[in-house]
Length: 474
Image (cartoon, rainbow, N blue to C red):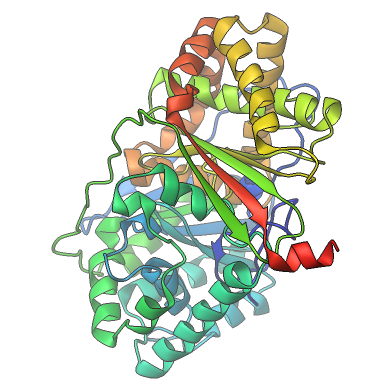
């Protein structure tokens, strides 16, 4: 099945670029954090290896539930796709389910379903991933199956034509014919960024999707779906030595790619506020969206900004929700975050935005809302956050970390291990995240807010209802 939309405002927001699925990604969930974090510290057992062909293998044994979660992450996301082939990363994600050397069309999905498992695939900024949660006694079977499609796809004109139609239909359903379609998750990166790789239409131009050829597909597969551009993560009720033997047996013979293109995805420092108006004929109410560039990943400021996100926008107790929703009544919720709504604050590898949005009634102007946002931000820039408020934010951060790592399906854990290995060659970072959170001070919060929440680092979209909405209101 095609599964789309995991956000609370599912009726208003287009979904991430997802393929076949029978389970939601816990890292994308927006559940409120518990009142207090568990006392236990994180210690994820990790065995990390690399095969001779460059494949990174991360194994995390956990015998609490008799299942295994297998994830294969490829270092190709929609910001890395070739020019003149927008939407190609997402199109290719679909192609991976069309059959391989030993599994025919949809047989991979059928194999998972017959064994009582669940699976999913998605395209993100910097990676495309595939995972399945299956009974642990089938671990070898699914390692073989993932290796089979890494080794070679059934690339035919019929399969390509079929999936071009599927992807184009997704664009029409989720963007072109949807109220608030593409707003703001497609719109904000195109406004805020200047580098084409960060600023193009990630879902893809319909003409460019149609223009994809079999030669394009084969070239893309050979360049990016190679073991030296991938991470295999196996977490669950497994023996690490046995898993490593299987990884060598099934993935080891796959040849590495000769060269993997790495475009420059850097962004210059934004020095002027950007603001545009978008008219949506299908929108029943106006909406406002904004974005700020966040600090470079791996810096102390990045850790501080993750807590700023929690202080300002995450949860009913956040400052934006208290003022904009509870006090002012502009909207029933404020949605947003770092790498929102396509991922989380950890699973990306380049310039990133912190964005937010709300749908509001026509009796309040966007400038009124922005004035209140500015007041909240200025307070954070001028005054040190209180120890109690910072402690609540840290508790929320730790609770979310524990929930992600401790979830029984292990999908969130696999996502962290895979992206930390893929981008930083360091899956063990998951065991240092607590220290990153605890190290943030009120002074770091204020310093980071002053630099990264300045108006000249902000991009704004005013969405106005179009003719259809206006006629409905008459």
